[in-house]
Each structure stands twice: as C-alpha cells, then as structure tokens.
Length: 183
Image (cartoon, rainbow, N blue to C red; front, side):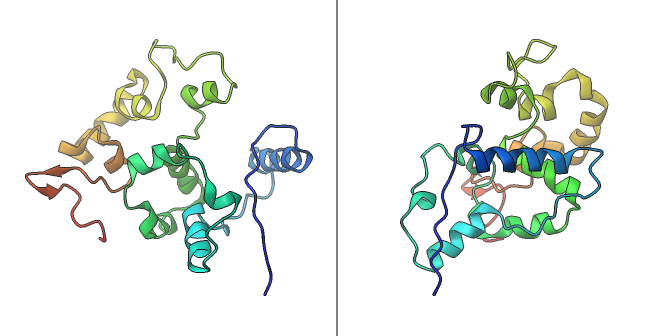
C-alpha cells in the first residue's frame, strides 16, 4: 500500500514550487503555446469522493474551509452526485474551460480579478459590478447574444443554475423545478 498526502497550498504566496507551477500553467494557456493543456485530470469532487471511499477522512484536503465551494454549491446542488462529469465529457476543451470558470466563479471578470487583487475595482465600464450574472443576463454589451439566450431559456432566463447546467433545489407547488436530484 502506498500512502499519499495531498496538501492545499495558497496561490501566490511565494512558495517556490507553486510559483513555478503557476508560470508553467500560464505559459501553456498562452495563444502562442504549441501544446494545449491536457484534460486528463479529475474534477475535485471525484478526488474527494475517492478519498472518502478509501476511508481517508482526515487531513488537510478534507478539512477544508466553510466558504470553499459556496458559489458552486449555489449553482449545482447535485454536483457531488457525479453527474457533472458526464456534462463535461460532452464538451470540447475550450467549452469545458469556460463552463468551469463560470461554475466556479474563477473568471477574468472584474469581480474575481478584484478579489485576487489583479484589478483596482470590480466595476465594469457601465458602473455595475462585473459578475457572472451581470455578464450573462444584464450587461448591455451582450444584448444580441442575450436575445438568443432568452429565447432558448424562456421562463428560466436569468436562472444562473439552469444556465450553467446545474441542479437547483428550489421548489414550486411542492415539486422541485428541476425534477429528482438523482436525474
């Protein structure tokens, strides 16, 4: 049996290996990069699931913080059922990357850039906070694309969970609007 210990390392904190990994990741995602990053990694929820199945229930990875995943859980209450893996397998690399950014909140939108101190403000040029809901549903810059989205989504337009292919546990008339969580 091999013992493996995984540690969460805060980004941009001066840790040599972390800084090198960050530089390599940036280099691999540049437009002029010849090799695209591989998608053979596993989503975090599957790693945690495997750790639990192996009865590894303690350690720095599973201790976690209460606020980690708060945004993602709001979008998809069924995320930890393993249904998300099937969703991502239907997408090509760039589509999966965009969906991952939107579902985790780690995007190049101003709200995230401000949070990580890469921008002076979270406001967009219109004066509103540039967040994922602002980008998808309200920003005047994308009105034409939004018309198409509104036609596709009809009554669910502006439902962030629905738009990002998540499961919402909200109920109407005693029934979940997204059906059974297992489906």
